[in-house]
Image 1: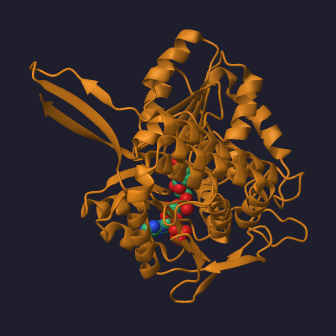
Image 2: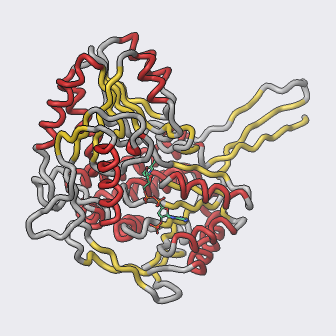
Image 3: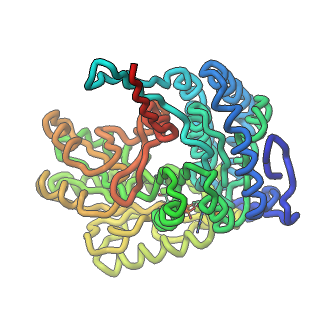
Length: 474
Ligand code: NAP
């Protein structure tokens, strides 16, 4: 079902989409497959709701978001289970994602009360200047499959807190998780039209968003390629855009680092969600004198990881999203080995008893070099290439010499070096001795081809606001 103007409805074409479990290839369920017309209806509903929603007091918006968060909490187990069945990540990671999902709603329920304007000193005695913060307007959100729940609330919670109605188009691999999120939202008794869910063919739906002047903000999380395409489309109606795009995270380990912590952090950062996160480590740089020790310890831990259905509590690595993802991973490994890389563990598709899923062995390649495809292409899979470096200056240059700039990690126990690295890495997010920086109150987002805009914290709220400057002569 689609959720438009506060009602569950079929697609105007009556088409449905079948969702398959990547661990088993079995059907998880069906959902209405909407059309451009459905997206246009949702835009109209959102536009009609805008006037009513933006006039609600901060307290009323906050109260609605709190109720929504509580409805999500009641459904936590069901949502986590659906995430794993739709896209494969281990259940304990799905449970973590649901906590993150709710944390955005909780956080923006509070932040809705803190949208302040300014008074600005005027340049003449008979003038007064005010700056009002106003909602930008109807917001369209397009979300990916790798965090099918958290990427939705990270957008709709700040949008609603700011006073903006939303229309969400989730990824076609994970619409059933989106439906559960909207069931929670529906149970919170929203004003009709303030939040709408439209599944369907991505280019038709996004055309409806981009062609409409009523949509004043487009927020997207996904690949850089699609993000560029959407930015071009948004230019015709001069929308405000936020783009959370691809990454290629360096993970830098200096010889003064706590080796054990650096290895554990690398395993977690690389293989979380089977390597399918935008902030996953892509390139591990280890200082020469500890490189062999690091590689041995790392490969030995990776070789112990259990591959399987995410619903099995022993599983560390679930399936990749589909069989197509296996091809990309395999070709990056072939290329790396042809160019002199040494396979330390993994390297091929994994057989899991009684399952027909898209499983791949967690893979470590030592002696990686900058000319390998994996050194440039976003991996989005469970391959960890290890590079060596000699000096701090060299590794900073190699880490920055790249079009992406989402997340970077650095492990060192030298305080001054940590500060220099923090300042010198050209990334939107830097984890210093920290493999998991994401949190609701901090600004998540990238620089360069990794995107524009921030999600999380007070910064994420500002994305849905515009300043109105009022000059008064008295
Ligand atoms: P994707 O192919 O770009 O898809 C993301 C969303 O865009 C989906 O809803 C998809 O819909 C839609 N889409 C695809 N082609 C489109 C088109 N031509 N026009 C309009 N919409 C289109 O990315 P993905 O494979 O789902 O996700 C992986 C990518 O997302 C990676 O690059 C990852 O780094 C990035 N990501 C970034 C962040 C961040 O915060 N920076 C977070 C998570 C993921 P359909 O599914 O219906 O095709």
